[in-house]
Each structure stands twice: as structure tokens, then as C-alpha cells.
Image 1 (tube, rainbow, N blue to C red):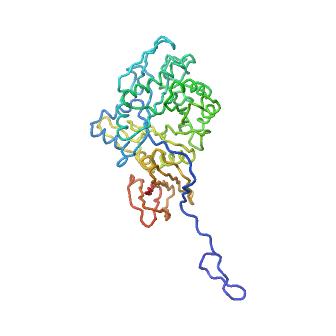
Image 2 (image 1 turned 180 degrees about the horizontal axis):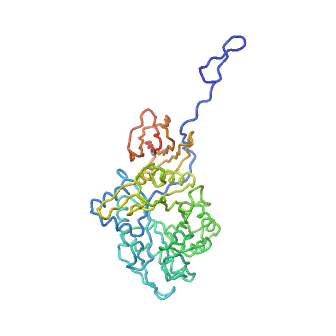
Image 3 (image 1 turned 135 degrees about the vertical axis):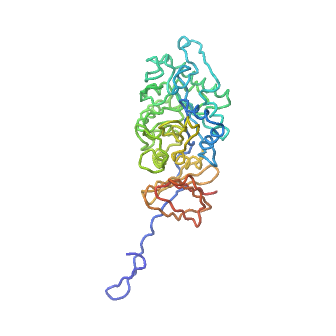
Length: 444
């Protein structure tokens, strides 16, 4: 019986109406229930994709950099993932140039490193990112040089020969030193990318046990840099690598961040570690360029927003790194470069990521947030400066009204027609539009 209804007893006198429990709040934030600390959100521009950007006019370059890194007009990204090259100079477009392209004469021979100060334009974008305030630079190797591997090729998988472990570790650390020479501090260092997948491009296999063994070698040589492992092809597959490292006291000592991709399997729970975890590479599958927010293709902005939410809330991920920031042709990157027209196009995937990255800053802590309606995907964060952020992804086809905002706040709407369009929150009420992402930023 609803409040206000009138009932009669057998004696003809009114019976007290039962009091109905108040409805559950649309969104409830539990500030005191803390989860993971956030390291940031980022992109990779490996495999020479920065050269596409640098071929554009300077004003177009600046526009793209603003879209990636500016906190007022763009995504405010805070992590840049760099690709450590393995191929000889002059290799095809999709490969990265090695800092030691030729065998120096064996694993114990004095190394013969080369450095051009450019690194396929990765130095340029790193310097630009740093000027915007980016401080996390994650350098990751897809493969050791071919002569260090049992297949003699930087491509097509193959395994690092044990006698080259020390030389490969020194090779990786030298890469960080070259960047230091350019004024860029590599903060995070990965020695393998998708070690459980053989690709026709640069790739190298490690079993979980082999990855733990190599981490024991790299760690003491790479002091001062956070070692990351292992960028597995899928999130569930990454658990075996994390478990192997956690079971090895020496490997566990040196590996500070556990990383995984979400191509083979999505984030469905945390990795088995108390260390930081990153979703370090993913973009949607597909064969076309897609700029839509919500078209059911699986390549749209809504898909990316949902994936970011799941990584943060199901996987307790401290970082989310997208692949790629910009590319060409039928790409699912955030931006598409048109080499003929010398311009670019922007997808809603950028704004899906920006809704998190611009407002949830490095050092933020995710706090518990729940929604009464399962169609609402909700997460909440407290930034180091005291601002609070609530991300509400309404996957339903009807709007939802939330009356629970306390404090001065601004809501930023992202959907088909809006890209972080701001509006002040009045009376503590926010309308969560259907099939849309609403970012509520509450002042200190």
C-alpha cells in the first residue's frame, strides 16, 4: 500500500497506513570506502604514428596535441606509452628503429648503440607531452633485436636466448638513458608486449616462468625505473603472468606494475596482485573508421566509455592506455590522419576517454559508488586537490534524475551531439541523459 492511501478496519475506523520504505538513492557515493589510486590515462603513438602528425602543418599539429593533452579543451592525458624499437634502420613503415641494430659480436661483446635523438618522432611528442604537464612515460619493447632471439628475427615471435638476458636488460636501460639525454625521464619500463601472441610484426614470446626469470635480471640493472610486466594479449591471460611474478620473491621485488591488454579477453576482475595494475593497450575491433557515439558497432564512443568503466571498477586498474592516439585509414584510433588532405578527423572515442582523463587526475583515489538501476554504470573519485568526480554512464534508453549532488558542481555531457558540454548543477539535481556519459565534477 502506498503512503497516503486510506484503509478501514472491521470496526469502521481508519487503519494506519503502512509506511513504505523510501526508495533507494539513484546514486550513492561512499567516500570512506577507498579503492585503487589512479596513475592516469594515456595513449601510445608507437610504430611511427607520430610521423603522420608531424607531416601536417604546424597549426594542425598543435590542434592534435591540444586534443590529446590540454586539460581545458582536450583530454588532458597523463601517460604516454613509447615503443622501444627492434628493427634495423630503413625497415618498413610499421616498424620502429633499434638503438642497436647490429649484433656487436655476441652477448658479452661491448655494445654498439646508436641514437638519432628523434626515435621515429617519439622524442618530439614526448617533449610536447611534458610541456603540457605529462610526467608518466612508459617505454615498452615489442621484441629484442632479432640476433638476440632463437628465430633470428625481430618479427614472428621467437624467444629471447638466455645468454642474451643481461645484454637485453642493458639495451632496455640504455634506451631510458638516451631519453634522459633529451630531457625525458622514462618512469616505467616494459620488456615484453603480448608475450603470449605471435605477430608478423615485431613480437617475442615469453612463458610466465620466463618472464619472471627475466624480471629478476632486469630489476637490478633498471634501478630507478618502475619495471612493468607483461602486457599480455588478454586480461584473463595476464593473470598467469602476474601469478608467476608474485610467486617468485625476486621477480615480485622488481615488478612494480602489472599490465594487461583486452583483445583476447576483457577486464572481468582484478589481477592477482597487491601492486598497481594497468590496462595498457586496447582499441575496438573493426575494419572501418567510425566517429559515432552510439551506433551498436562496437567501435563507438559508448563502447570505449563502458570499457574504461569496467577496467576501473571491475579490474581495479590504476591506468588506462588506449591504442592509438592517431593513425590513418580504417583505424580505430582516437583520431584519423588524412595524409592526402593534410588534416585529421576526431572520433567520439576520444571524448569517451577524455570524460575520465580530463577530470580524474593522477593521484586520485577511486571511492565506492553504487547505483539503484543496473543500467547505470557509476564510478566516483576524489582528486588530490579535493575535487570529487562522479562518472555516470546511462546505458538505458530513458533519462534518470539524480537529486543527490551536494556542493557546487558542473555536469559535462558526452553523447552523439555533445563532447564534454558543461552545464551547472542547480538544486543538486542532474539529469542523466539516455545512452550518454555524464561527468559530474564537484568543487572542494
